[in-house]
Length: 276
Image (cartoon, rainbow, N blue to C red):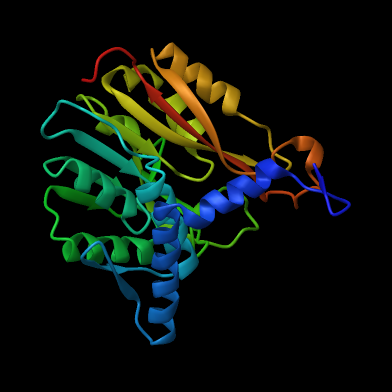
């Protein structure tokens, strides 16, 4: 539509206005704003939903709150009173906090390789008074041992396989070792290592009732979302897809530096049928 001689995208205007007055998004903005204020005052925590929450970066705290608490990317329903949850890439614990908020008796096994975030995770779990949460300070991988880890300071720290890249040495655990028994929800957000890990434990995914994986595409590297989806289908899952980060279309891209994150996609998978 043309208004005052200019082309106006009314759909885009509606979306922006909706975001401005959406209570959840307004709350996420408030969380981020309060975190910035706290940081300016020399504090590394802010009050969220009645608990003192520790963070490293205000912007990332706001983004995590929006994705996890407002959009509910990890929310699931179950008849299990004490569901078993595996949280791979637990970061500062926002996902675990949300899952325990919805399922107070859940048993959560969390994994986080970044020592700074693991420390914040434990402080947040303690601050919220949570029980039955076990954190392993390690990266989820295809074998137990150690690998170099490139810290990001935010949401995108990742295992490093390039000889010239800097990083710290972190322990690794093999995810398939944790899938011998039934798992009600498996969350995988491990910044590019997801395909290798899913390949390694593909034959045990039958023990998983629900799964979330964030698939990452990096500029200059082969795309592998299609193989991830094939693994999930072969394991009997149905999946839903939503873009987290990236252009609306590849036609709009102006290019990324080699190795830079090109696109991140949320894949949620369930077995369909009744709530289990």
